[in-house]
Length: 560
Ligand SMILES: [Zn+2]
Image 1 (cartoon, helix red, strand yellow):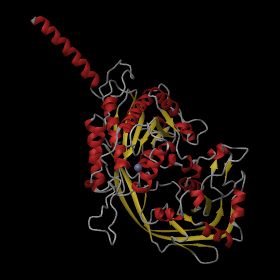
Image 2 (cartoon, helix red, strand yellow):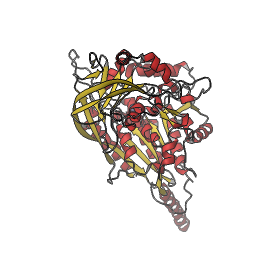
Image 3 (cartoon, rainbow, N blue to C red):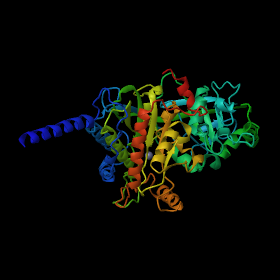
Image 4 (cartoon, rainbow, N blue to C red):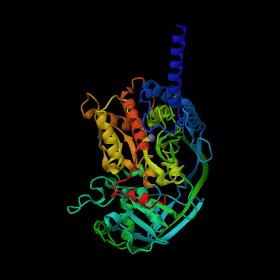
């Protein structure tokens, strides 16, 4: 009896020892097949997400703005959680914090833009402007050259700058990308917006061409938003990361109204409609307008620092990795306005955007760290800063990555979770662009779900979230977006929900935690994305962009 008890006790001890060796996160187990046991998906729970969410969206964080006490507190909380879960510090300095330098600049509203003969264009009424040169006083002057959509796209055999020397000149550019034609229905992505249509691309290309400045022509139809949005987005404080010495920068980045653009072209003795029409076809040439533009920009320039929070679960092959990102910053607090009642809520809590994503990411981190084995490749979790100020934390990480661009197998971004219950679909922006889409579709089939399409491909959401700076350097990327098929609800429900959030709560102090949220759908999605990341980490081959994709090229060119 005694002996039997002792033997049984030993057996229990042996089993416990085996279990604890298997369950201890990050402990190398030589010889074990790398993918024998995946993430502990059961540990992803709605109550746990609610606990993180409640804390991170509290008023005490004062809206988690970069370089504020509330923002830093959020960063510290996330780093502490990663440490508790057994993630190692992932920043180059050996800590969890990658310091991101942020430049805050605000242009003096006395700004005007002179163009040819006639009255200068007025700030806000006709033109908004900022500078890619981070100095208090910036001057730019040069001949205006109309360059159509301002696109250089070898895969479409398209070059709007062909034959032009843009040094010391100022490009006048149409927004959006050229329309598809009957002969080429897939030209520039057909009805979907390509990155060539985004305003960020226009400025980047003009800088690469050596131009002194670039002026974009706003129209409501081409931008999908009115001039007031351009006015409010580009006046007041602007955020950027420091210019890299030796890299081309535009002294002038401007937007003008359609009427102002017509006036500029008229002063050159031409007609904007004619120029536009001619620019729609392949092979159109840049048109020097023979008139000068000049500006003198006065601006305040302030330099600040805010960290990305980075943790890593080391894989058997630490030279390659998967990356998850989710931004922790939000809009801070708004200034008091005259007439505000004394109890006015001025705190942008950002509960959905993006305390919800953070809570989901922490649950994913937990399930990964408690996997029964090491992943083949490392898994990085990066909580980015300054997403709301222009994807700056992600941008900085993409130029100062923990591993070279070619070492990243794939990237999953999470911004704003679904809090309205279970769904049939999971929408992953970018799925159709790379082999990650096939992996996601296979997993969806196993789970009885489907990968939903981008509900609004014409709005270019793929280019407007934190995964994009990494996609741009060739890393296959997916970004979780809003679902369209709620279980037991008709399709109009999802649209109504989306419209309501966008109209009432998006980027408003009312984006606060609600007691009636249903976490079941978010739990499904986080389990899905934990498993997907794990599979990417263990895939025998490195995932890749489809060869026709614009972003396949930087990776093909990468030295790694
Ligand atoms: Zn967000």
